[in-house]
Image 1 (tube, rainbow, N blue to C red):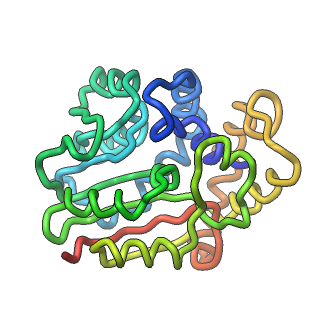
Image 2: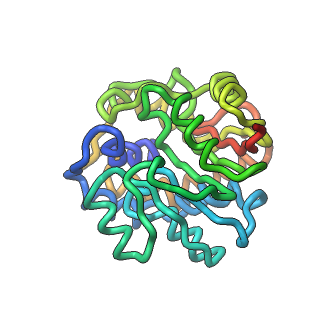
Length: 248
């Protein structure tokens, strides 16, 4: 079962339209995948300092910025296209922008989870993000990995690609970044996603339903993190996370 892929399904609105009908699902995912959501932030904790200014690119309803706030006491500036989500973010106390061009100051750290794959010209977006960083600032990206896992669901949610390490390394290098760390994440999720590819996805009653999401997050994902830490993160995973520094 591919829990994060379900989360991605309800985030596709970000570059597809300004109105989004799946608000309830976003709130549900915030509740169903607490361990997974926390892990996305944990992967970059070694590189983040609570004194940093933080920008979240593609903030949704604020699930991940809220984790940053709880852990570090830092309130992110949020870039979010959807109007209703911007209202939700504002109600949670965040400074919100519709697009990256509206952010007039440079920041120390940019965080972006499961957004870049929805953008056709991702390299141009990386250039814009680079321009929004201070000298030697850092960017953290969490991305879907491996085209082997590509399914019709990726098409339905507006993905242009799933990334390989080689591809994202090349694009970051060409857009003014120097990669500091890159690893796979959720090794068991790789096999769960591969299984889902063949048995199908059912967000109501089957694989991808709230019941299976809760089960995956509580029982399967913690084992996946242990296996990642034992070394599988170097070889495979459902996602890739990368930290890169602005180099020019």
